[in-house]
Image (tube, rainbow, N blue to C red):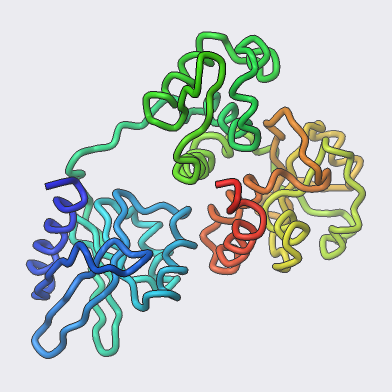
Length: 333
């Protein structure tokens, strides 16, 4: 029995103990975009739900869950681990879920089951890899945007990003060991399982790298945040991320929060753009951490804009993230 089956059967057992609902798992259903079906039977009703399975649910999975619901109906997310903040966001999105600890949210017709507050003990804990620490995430972002950078010399990578040669060797070998980088021949490497790698990067970026990049929150002295598109940015030195980048790249979404990435100093930013530091203000500013430029000089690379949107968990931003991915990233991954 594989990990997925172990978790699912544990979930069914715990759900019955906590709610009285009896469950039956169908692994092979012939339905696209789902991992199986779960039949749940109560005293008076019986329903069959399409299932999405994840070891651990992350915000990066939300657009996929929403798409599955649109295509297959009232989906249930089954996972070994769903942390409290993620459970709350799933409920806000109207997505049913079950986890191995017995936490659940099931809403269907006159059914409403909500159990919360139980901590999961993982069946087979996943080891976090140091290739996804600050240094690894920075280098990996360049690889995701330009695979050819995998094949430059370690010396060039070290000079570009001020990384020790030994660390670069460790990062690349670790990605090989995890199956994310493959050796084509003696001189050439390529990325593999790119969508999975992107998802891992997005989740780790929010947790381990982005907090270290924050310069601060600001408001505009003249209150012209509604006219943000008219603000002249310094070419490639300061670029829109998050919601503004999504608006510029897709033409969709009216930004509620503004995000900038920059190599300029805090003093320079305040003076040039007439800003005032203020906690929780409309404008969030972060250090630019990549050493390459793409065609659009006013926005960060689409991968980063996509990550910023996904990691908000906001339904409005998730919809825009799907449009951005389908329009600009899908063919790449």
